[in-house]
Image (tube, rainbow, N blue to C red; front, side, top):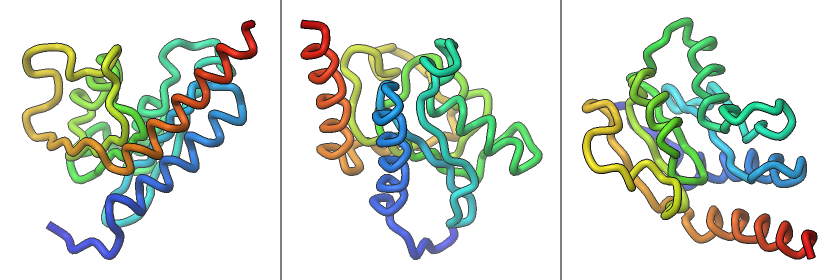
Length: 152
């Protein structure tokens, strides 16, 4: 393993910057970055509203950008930092891209992949949850609270 001069917190803060971009664009505020060799190679946030595409989640956008950067469909040596636990669709994309590691912030008790019993991620993928969990959960809570208030 390559020694990292940056911590998971550092890269999660970069993912949070992406989440704030989504928040400002009235998208569900989820952000993601993909890191290879201690360097961010892809940045993304949710674009589902803007693109009218239910599959335009931050993780999907980041995986596409990272694959283009690497010139490869497999991302075994990369780490995905995402502010919210991936949904089942995004976990599937992580499986097929063979992402080496996933670090997520807030857990998603309603739609997170961990609700599904059984092997969802590639066997070679490691997962660490709870990085900057409070900050990641706060932006999601604030977004939906604001949405509920504007619907009244």
